[in-house]
Amino acid sequence: MELRTRRPARSPRPPTKRAARAAARRRIAAYTAVVAVLGLGMLLLAAPTAARAAEVSPGPVLVLVLLVLAAELMPIELDGPGGSPVNRDSRDATTMSQPFAFALVLGWGVAAGVVALGLCSALADLLGGKAARKILFNSAQLALSLGAAGGVYELLGGDRGRGTVGLAAFAAAALTFFVVNNALVEAVFIFADGGPAWDEARQGVGVRAWTSSMLLGMAPIVTVVAERSLELVPILALPTAAVYLTCRGAIRSDRDRVLAEAAAARATAMAAEQARLVEGEQALIRRLQESDRLKRDLLATVSHELKTPLTVILGTLGTLSTRGAALDPAERREFVDMAVRQGTRLKDLIEQLLLAARFEQTGREQVERQLVDAAEVAREAGLAAGVCHPDRRIEVAVGGALPVHAASRALLQVLGNLLDNAAKYSPDGTPIRLEASRAGALAVLAVEDAGPGVPRPERDRIFERFTQLDSGATRRAGGVGLGLYIARQLAQAQGGELLVGEPARPGAGARFELRLPLADLTSEDVLAYAASTR
Image 1 (tube, rainbow, N blue to C red):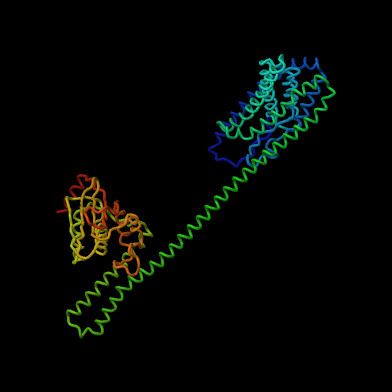
Image 2: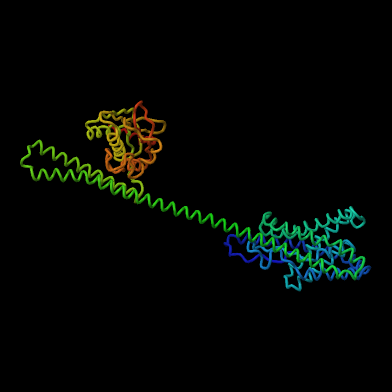
């Protein structure tokens, strides 16, 4: 194998990588220079011995050298013309010169094989118009590979042994040539990448090993034929051509297999991406359908909730207009009070819708937070609930002071929404409990009723917009399902959290907890806090 093709041009890299590219070029230049010096040194040292071998057997040596040169002029590109579309780093090429060069090693010594392979490789590359540095590197790495293989062959006694000894020595030499040759070439790309590139080095190693074994396996046959009868050497063209065609077919088959695997992988990836897109489209369709359903439900709910108080207001005003003179003062007061209550309800519904729309557009409401006593805010919320729901018993349990940084108006609105919900959903005559206590570093304001409670799977959903567990135009609680949504948004704007807790009393229904971090008081805070609570 030789380094016959260059990596294709890549897209421009950012200027920050110029230093890395320069370092890689320096590493490659130093490495190829070392290989070239060692290889050329081996060629110079082997030249005299190779010349003596040629003088002793000029005919066989000359014929084998010509065969090495002819084979070097007809390389087999392992990645196919232009490189594989799968792996654009076309690195590998092999030639039919290996069996003839190895035959020189087996029959006429290591020096003859090294010089013949090194010089023929340089001449073939020169005729092929390759750069000087590549000519030197290819010639040197082939000379070093064959020199290492020949050294192993002689070390194991292959040049003296016969039978099993010679066969074992030849097999070890062939393996050495394959390993050293591939290692010298792959090292170039490892140095270029700045680190190990074992995944790339393993690509195609099976085909390279099979091709080398096929070619090197012919070396003993070439040696025997050249030694016994030089006239029979041309007959080797037939098996050599067969091996050449077999190698090309195997290489092409392996390339097609790699391309097919890559195409299959791309098809699988495209199918997975298509399935993901289809699933995303279906999910979008489901979300749109759900959004349309929610819009329809919202329109029906809002229409019903706004229409009911408006109808009552118009009815009472119409009665006062047509029969006002016939009504006594108590009856007129009752009609006026009814209109006021329904007007207040209508105003609250509209304010909830506007506040929810503001949250959606601008996020959580940003209000200025001050140092307040959450326990005092709880007392005030309990008093307000008692006025709004005179038929309810509001139990307020407050311990010591609970200093927090919050807007008291926002806290009152959160507790007011929770108390209103408790009054709507709990049975008539049952008490509603409001607690203010300390839990570690938190102030906990909890509202607990005796209603049906909140099922565990619904404890997150009830804080969504327009969500009510007793949904439908005929539900008894009324409202548009924005109270808890607004309450949680306000709680989070104060740095706290609103959640559904477990009831603390036997027989209790739902328990909502507003949790706020207690204030870390400085001396200035203590004075301000004391002044605000007088």
